[in-house]
Image (cartoon, rainbow, N blue to C red; front, side, top):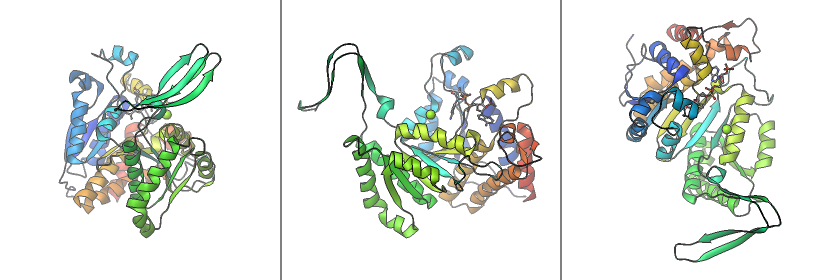
Length: 401
Ligand code: NAP
Ligand code: MG
C-alpha cells in the first residue's frame, strides 16, 4: 500500500518519561507504516533542554512560527526534586509556558467521548470545549500582607505623570491586599481566538464574567468580546447558524451542568483553571482529553492534556508491565496531521487522521482498553491490555479498514 504523502513538515516535539515511550510506540505502530512522515524533530526531553540551556524550546517555538503546526509530547516542568534527579544546570521554566509566551495563544481542551465511559453529568451528550485565557489576572498579582491599621489605595501614575487614585480600604488591623491587571490586546486576541475556534467547529460560544460586581475590570472583558463579535464575526455566525452567548459566571456554571454539551466555553484565567479540572474529571479522565494551543496568528500546537505519567515510567524502568493510556497523545498526532492536511489541501492526510481517531475509539468501545479506563467503564467483559498491546490493537483496526 502506498504511504500517504505530506508537503510541509510538522514540528515534532519529543518529551519525557512514560509519554516519551508512548510517543515512539505511536510513531512506529500508528504513523510511520501509513504516512510518509515529514517532520522537523525537536527533543524537548529534559536532558536535552538542559544541554542546550533550553534553546531547543525556543527553536521549536520558532519552527512552529515558520511552519504553522506542531505536535508536542508531555514534558517535565522542573521543580527542586527534578533539578536533583537530572542534575540540572538550573530550574528551567515550563516548556508549555515558553511556547505559550512565544506563540501568544489560547488553549482549547475537549474531552474525547466514547461509549462505555459515561460523563458523571447525565445530561452531557456532546463534548464541552473549554478555552482558558492564559494571561494576567491573579496569576500575575502583587500582594501585601497588612500587619497594622492603615489606608490601602490603588494608584496609577501615567507616563506623563498624571496620577489616578482610588481608595481600596481603611484597615483597622491585620489583613490582606492584592493587585491584578490585564491588557486590552491580550483580551482582544483571546476573544478573537475563541470566536474563530467555535466558528471552525460550528458550535456556539459561551463567555461569562462577573461584570455585575466587577463593573470596570470584568465589564471590559465583556465589552471587548462584544466588540470583536459585532465587528468581525456576527455575519459568519448567523450564516453558520451558531450564537455568541454572554451571561454571568454563576449562571453559566448552572447552565453548563444542565446542558447537553456541544459548545465552546471561554473562561477568564482563574475560571478556566478551576473549571477545566472540573470538566475533565466529570467527563472521565485527563487521558481522554485533547488540548490545542491556537495563536491569533494562525499557529497550532497539539498536545495531550496530562503530564508525563511519572509513576508508570518508574514501573517501566523496573521492567514491570504498564497499562498507560495513549489516547490523548494519539489525538495530538491526529489533530496535527488533520490541520496540516487542511492547510496543505491533502484530503488523504485528513482522512487518515479521521480513521486513526475512529480506530482508537472503536478499539475502546469494543472492550479493549488500558487500566485507567477499566476502572471507569460501564462495559462488561473488558480486555485490559498493556501500553503496547493497546496501540497494536488500534493498528490492527487501522489495517482492517
Ligand atoms: P500526570 O503525569 O498527568 O499523572 C498523574 C496521574 O494521573 C498518574 O500517576 C496516573 O494515575 C494518571 N494518569 C495521567 N495520565 C495518564 C495516562 N495517560 N494513562 C494512565 N493514567 C494517567 O501528572 P503528574 O504526575 O502530576 O506530573 C508528572 C510530570 O508531568 C511532572 O514532571 C509535570 O511537570 C509534568 N506535566 C507536564 C504537562 C505537559 O507537558 N503538558 C502537564 C502536566 C504535568 P495513576 O498513577 O493512579 O495510575
Ligand atoms: Mg489547574
